[in-house]
Image 1 (cartoon, rainbow, N blue to C red):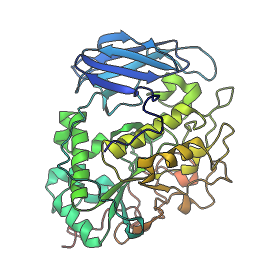
Image 2 (image 1 turned 30 degrees about the vertical axis):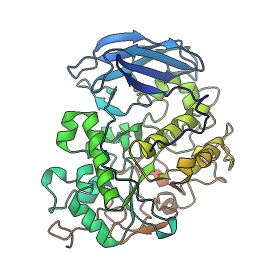
Image 3 (image 1 turned 45 degrees about the horizontal axis):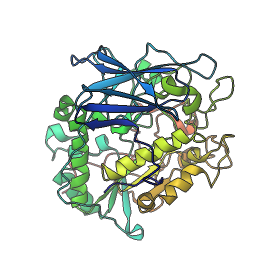
Image 4 (image 1 turned 60 degrees about the horizontal axis):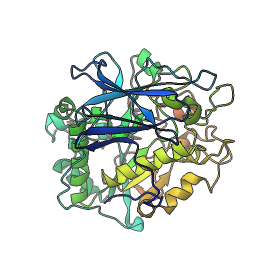
Length: 438
């Protein structure tokens, strides 16, 4: 199934990102303020050195296009952009950047995050989405790694992975609970905040997105990671197919309100280097208006940000067959150019007007409210909740009131190096022997 766009097919713009053809690939990237942009197709030695650099051309409406015969599945690539100086701009033509629409991301041997072209083909075996009725739904929230990491009934190499969650042992356990859907804590590619890295800690929960179209590679098996982003994506799709075959829907907890680039002094990996003035909410002096408490806030008063988010949702729903989404800090996605929440915001109206999207589950996070204009909610426990609008199975995953979120210094966004000691957001409880009850 392909999730349709909300525009007429006769007027819809060509897709951003990489489009493959018989002569390689064509890359389209958006930036309204860039004056030059380059596509770098990288060497196959694993470094960030470019084998070929292509000067991209502006084609109107802020879109840049570049073509290269080397842009094929398995190949890594990056962008660079230059543009005007000024308080709202962060252009640096020497810095390599991620394609915001990249389906795969990798880190080079010299520590640079780069994009990867993936092969999208996958055999779904005729297995469709379960389409469980909303009033029959019982949703089990879980963490992909934590769910099976200690389960000795699984082969060792599958524990804590997408393959482990899709394994028959895991599925038998989930079915024994009577649940109808799993809601996965963030699985978009993410990184730990720089502060945590300096402390030699990690962001366990994943609320620090690096790429909105790529699955988090560290949750794939070692063999899939070694084979590259295409195999990571296939392992993810296989997990979804196995769960669907068992009648279990798959929902994603998605974080579109901010990115891993943090505050103005944080790492520049993509959006900041492509068009900081447009992607991030800020004042005329370049001071970020942070309504998320995470250092930056994507500016949903900009059409390009709304389009990016809707395109990402369509991709996961259509190409990866995801059944529903839970939006982290949902009200942040519906703020206008004055940072005021609007119930008629274009993101909400377009989301609801999309026939395929309307049929799917959509659950907001209670992390912000219209009256707080992005400030932390009154109750840290409420704002950290990941419960969905329909019933949630809490029997072994703990109640949904855990304060265990990793991001920044606000009370409801406290960084966590490891899972909290309480059962909230915990792994499905194993016995002392590390096994689930049979």
